[in-house]
Length: 410
Image 1 (tube, rainbow, N blue to C red):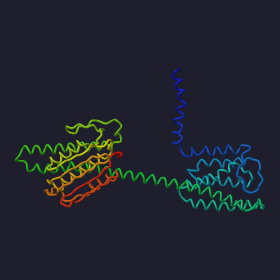
Image 2 (image 1 turned 90 degrees about the vertical axis):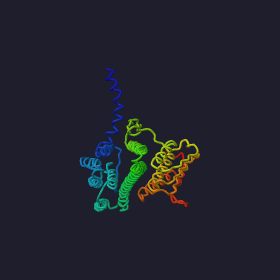
Image 3 (image 1 turned 45 degrees about the vertical axis):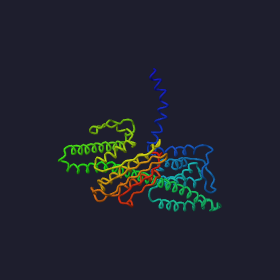
Image 4 (image 1 turned 60 degrees about the horizontal axis):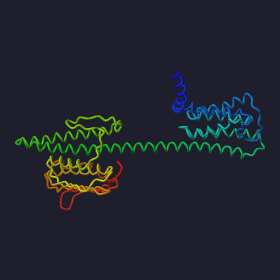
């Protein structure tokens, strides 16, 4: 008994929750049918007065009137699925209804059918409008013969009212199409921006680590006579590879739809175990680790950090880290062995980064690059409202400067 009582108590809540879902999932014909049934029912009410064209006297309902009421009301069930068929049936029923003098309330279905054609007919809309206009001409002539004293202006006014209903439907259609195109453009822009962001992250992560590994591996070829230094160089290559794997796995975790839901798992990165969902906000410690890694690759780097990071710094720390990372990567590739300086200054509302290389090194690495790294840095800084510049300096070498507003949301 208690279980039956609980089931009885849950039934209204279950109906309230499931009924809207069923209604939205049901066929469009099922959702349009109630409107036709409503017009059908109202047409039989004693005080229901419908549209009247001309001055023909109203006659009582008979068997033919019942058929005409159904012919005008029930086709509204297919007004969105087959709007042209709906308009043809409703128009025929409306014409006979008016010529016979029934003037039923079901005649209200005609402007609804015209609006539906304007809004939902996919093709041949102009043809349908022309056919309706040509069909209205003999009906107007028949009214003029049955009621010669009625001025033609009333027939013209009624026609213009129907044209207005058609035009309203066409406007609704154009608005719906424009909204759909706008949503499609937003979706395309979002996908493009996301692909660009992923490509930028992959470039920042992969290029730096792989460049460091290539430089360290090249140096190891000349250290066979010095086992200690060879072991140190190979250890640096191994550590760099592990960091690359860790960063790539973290980036893939960010692309995972389940990221951030608390279902992160520990990932073994070959000695370094990292929580996939841990925050990766760069700090001064990570900057020093980055500089030390570059030094192990054979690049002399002088690192200076001033001030205390703002709280909260938002995306500024990440962007500052990427600026230093990309600049050191370029120094390794195009000015290997050159003296490089990294200066990071934390102010109350901004972070200033300057990375300079004197350009006197061996020039190891590829002779040119795609420019994607610096372009990505400029985009990152511009998004936060900062300033970015990169280019040769008067005394020789290359310098990258960035002013990054702190406190911007991630």
